[in-house]
Amino acid sequence: MSEDAEDDWFERALSEDDASEDAPAETTDASAENSDDDWFEGDDLQSPDDGSDGTDEFEAEPSETGIEASDAPPGGQSSEADASAENRADTSAAGASDAATADSGGSLFDEDFGSALQSAGEPGGGGDAAVPSEGDFDEEPFESVIPRIDLGIEGLDQMIQGGIPSRHLMVVIGSPGTGKTTFGLQFLHHGLEQGENVVFITLEQSRESILDTADERGWEFDRYEREDRLAIVDLDPVEMANSLENIRGEFPELIREFGADRLVLDSVSLLEMMYDDQARRRTEVFDFTRSLKGAGVTTMFTSEANEDNPYASRHGIIEYLTDAVFVLQYVRGDTQETRLAVEIQKIRNANHSRATKPYAITLDGIDVYQQASIF
Image (cartoon, rainbow, N blue to C red; front, side, top):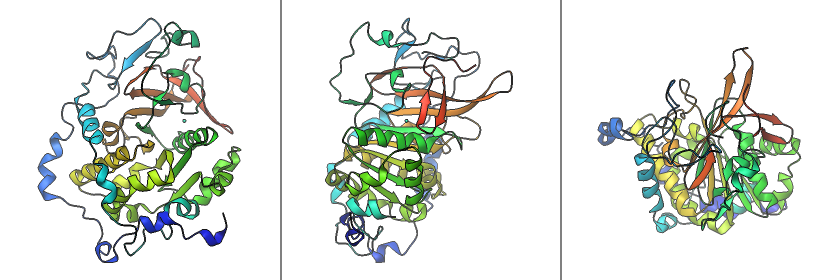
């Protein structure tokens, strides 16, 4: 794609009224303050307590292979909040895309979606549990009417029976340095190799930095950009927060027009930080996830982990609004050796291993050692 084609339709389509955008996003919502304490009351995602058996009263008994049918987080919590958030998200209005017009003045991106995104600028229970093998899934052939996709992360895909349901919302939670961005880029690269169109929205790095990271791993993102199959959006989190209502209105239609099959937002934590009021933050993030549900694109968020709980996101919101949660963390053994470990906390409508497995970040991306134990 030539540089003269940079004035593309996506940045114009996500434009906003100059008059309405002069004021920054409101950071207070007095009417919602009283709801802070009961937003997710009674259904917290959390790490298993020491001494608990890690099972859920609503889950099926674990199979001999250590694979469970799971829709709830570890730690015996109910899934009512998950179900509620899912039901509200699944009923998102298809008319959200009519909320703003492509001709509105003042552009969030200086160009449009297809080329402005191009120019704007990845068993059961623990180390002592049985290790699943390919044979564990072959006893009864997996059948599903839901279209499914692979993450493209070797070892992790083998821990998910049948694959991730298409159009799911996912979040990868982890502390700095655990490979969240690499996870997301690898997820998109796999889709590109399958002939899909993908979108990467970064609130942390520049477009050039993303292309350099991909190039180091031999992923030809620059070529996919030229072929109009990859769109990279480099956004300022403050600008996105101030324009989020406009983005929500236009996003579903723009995603459909671009033909996006996969989308990654890196990271939702920066977007959440733009709202000082907790109730406002929850509402904005919920509405944004609902618009993505309406767009029908398989979406992955990355999120910083809570400082006190590696199984929770920084603000404790996004894991309740998504269909799948992956936790990346540092684990230290008795010898004080530190390793990287991944755990699948939940996937709706999918059987998956609950084992915590070691992984490494290599020049090829993330490799999960499915057959190994942590120490």
